[in-house]
Image (cartoon, rainbow, N blue to C red; front, side, top):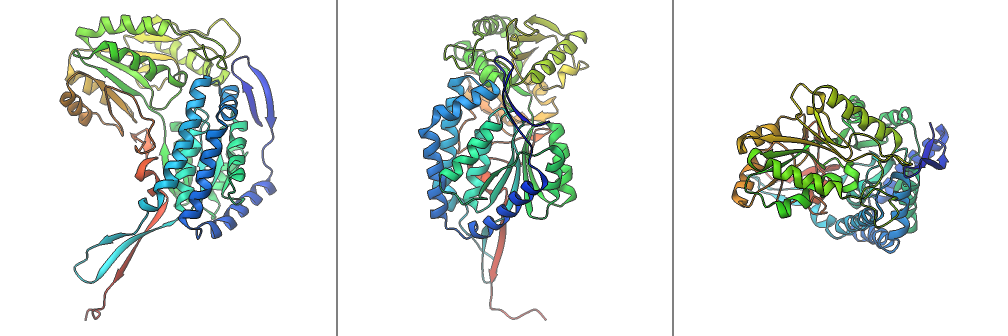
Length: 460
């Protein structure tokens, strides 16, 4: 099936794009490989000039980029603008810091001298999702282009105009053709790309199923991978939490991007003594959100990205109820055009219920009450995922102690603010491996070469 822009606000097809044919794909890969041979020798200063120009172009054209995201995947316009600005910030961050991150590191051997130096891998294949159609691209393009790699990208099939706009950004910024290449390809063609010897590394952000398939294929080819997959993040509320500040974070953590975020708050784990009050206030705050056209700045509840995503979520909710979960509110599609779902709250989810293990990618709250702190930690860790999580308490020392005991790649105390270019992003277990952003993000696809100098004689 061809790439399609379908407006999830009304279900209408906007534009269709055909897949690359075999010769188009080969030309793209050959151009990328040729470009890398020159780009790898381009100075950090010259790379940074291009990356900074790309950042400035994004910042200068926020509305143009944002409206495409809203049109194609239903992101509320204010959130779309925020994503564009954050994407530009990521590019600027790596333009400013890459050289320092990758500078040679002096070692201290017993004899002679030694250092570690960094060099780029080559052409990287990146498979990216629709939920953040620019941010996901910026967080691979920024670090990897500054490291001297070049990237070829398969973006999600429902955001082709965003994908094309981001590729054009690099041309407009003066990047050599082949530095950043958008590939309109099928899953079968993606397998051929992974197999291609010119591809030296593979990065994927997506589902567990996609991660398994791509990692397995790359593994057969002995190629380095990074995987940022799903999440079922715990939002722990202790009995001493300040609900005046906790409830707004709960709403934002669940409903930002329509709940379609890997590290969204998905399992709300609340100590029993405060559970009823929390649930009442949380339900009330969620009920106040206003569904509507995501292009309208007054809208606080937009559509899901696609009709398929909506039907999948309804199927999950129905299955959860069938297996004993209690439906407190919502559970159905909204009675209006487009892929809108009612904000939903499920309680009484037992371990044998499929919902206990599932990831709900949308406006669905899974609510759990626990007797105490220890039970909250145990439940938070009883998950196949390990991306992020949060804990709310007025006792920061207590929050730090709990954060250290929850098995995830990220923990947040009295906040859910993961959007910072300086902070590494990634998880463990089914949430994947590797890190993006921060210093760690640029290290994923560079060769760490040891160079040692000694003048002593060879051993006998």
